[in-house]
Image 1 (cartoon, rainbow, N blue to C red):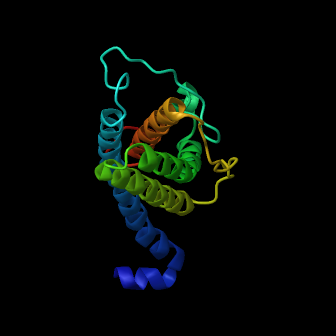
Image 2 (image 1 turned 30 degrees about the vertical axis):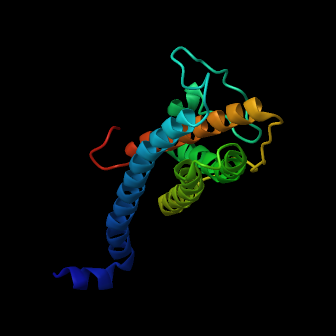
Length: 196
C-alpha cells in the first residue's frame, strides 16, 4: 500500500508524520538563533563595558548583581524544571528584555553619543530578544497545549545618576546574555541528537 493510500485510511497518522519534521526543523532553527544571539550578547556585553570607562573595564572590578525591576536571572533550579516550563520562563524573560534594553539604549545615547556601534547593538538586542521570544513561543505552541506559567510584565527600569545608569545597563546586558544563553541550553535539550 502506498503512503498516499495509507493517508486516506488514517488521516491522523499522516498529519502527525508531517508535523514531526516541521517541529524538529522549528526547534533546530530556534536553537540556532539562540546560539547566534548568545555570541551577539557576549559582544554586546564587551562593547558596553568598553564604553563605560573606569572602573567598569578594570581587572578585578566585580559589580554587585543589582535587582532589575521586572526581570531576574535564571535560578539554579531552572535546569531541573520540565523543558516546557523552562521554555515558558525563557519566553517570559525574553519578552521583558526589550523595554529594558530600550531604556539602556536611550540612556547610553545621552552618556555615549559617539558610540554608534554600541547604540546599534543595544537596538539590535531588543529586536533580537523579541524575535527569539516569538520563536520560543512558536515552539511551545507546536509542542502542544501546556499550562501557561505567569507572564512577566515588562517594567521600564530607571536609574538616577550616571553611575547607577551605567550599573543598570551593565546588569541588563548581563541578563540579556544569561537569558539568551539559558534559552540556547533549554532548546538544546529538544534538538534531536542533542543532550537529553
